[in-house]
Amino acid sequence: MSRSDPLDRAFRILDIVACAGREMPLIDIVAACRLPQSTVFRLAAHLVDSGMLAFDEDRKVYGPGPRCRRLGLFLRGRGTLRDIVDPGLADVAGRFEETAFCVTAAADGNRLLHHAIPEVGGRAFVHPGFEFPAHATAAGKVIRAFSGPSVPPGGDLPKKYQPATVTDPDALEGVYAAIRDAGYALNDSEYDPGVFSMAAPVRLGPETVAALGVVGPRDRMLGAGDVHERAHTLVAAADDLAALLCL
Image (cartoon, rainbow, N blue to C red; front, side, top):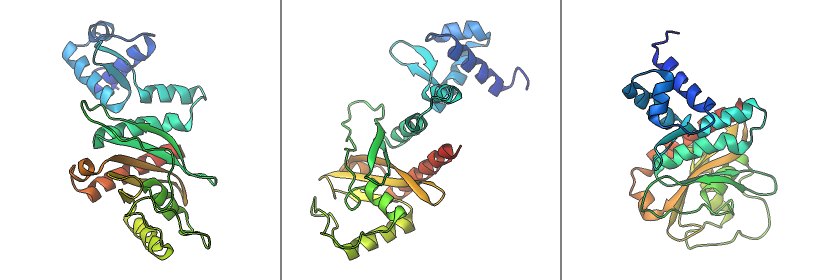
C-alpha cells in the first residue's frame, strides 16, 4: 500500500490517537503524522463518522471511538454482547434522531440490553422502558413473531394496556403473521399512549436472539417520513448487527 493511499493515511491517524494515551487536539495529530492539516481534518472526520475516533466538541480533542474501543476489548478477550451492540445503537439513534434500543430474547422473558439517545439538542426523548410484552410492544411482538409459537395455547387473555392493544388470540395470530411477512413490527400507542416504536429481529440462522428498535413520540415518528421505508432501514441495521454477532 502506498504511503499516499487515503486508507493508509487514515490508519496513521488512528494509530497516533489510539497509541497516544491521551486525547489529542488536531494540531498535535498534524504534527505527529506530518500530513497537511486539511487532510488530517477530513480523514479524522471520516473516522469519527465511522466510530473509530471520537471528537469532543467542547474541548476540541480526538480520542478512540466506540468501535476502536470495542476492537481492543475483543482482541484482549474481554468483549461483551453490549460492546458489539453499542456502536450500532449509536448509529441507528443518529440516523433516526430518536432513541434506539436492543432487547435480548430469553426463555424467562425479554430484557433491555442497552439504549442510545441521539445528540440532538432541545428535544425530549422516550426511554424504551424495561418490559416488553409480546402482544403490546414492537420488540416483544417481533421476537414472538419470529420465535413461535405465535400465541401460547390456553390461559387468560393478555393484558389490555391501551385501547389499541390487541388481545384476541386469533387477531394476534394475524398480527404475528403480518410481522413475519413485513420483516418488522410497529407499535402505535399499544403500550403507552402517544408512543410509536418499530423493531426488527436480530437473527442468528433460524434463531431470533434479539430485537433492534427505535422509539419516540407518535407525532414526531410519523412525521419523519415514510414509516415502512424507515422500518426497512432498521431491518438492514438489524441484519448488520446479526452479521457482527456471527463473527
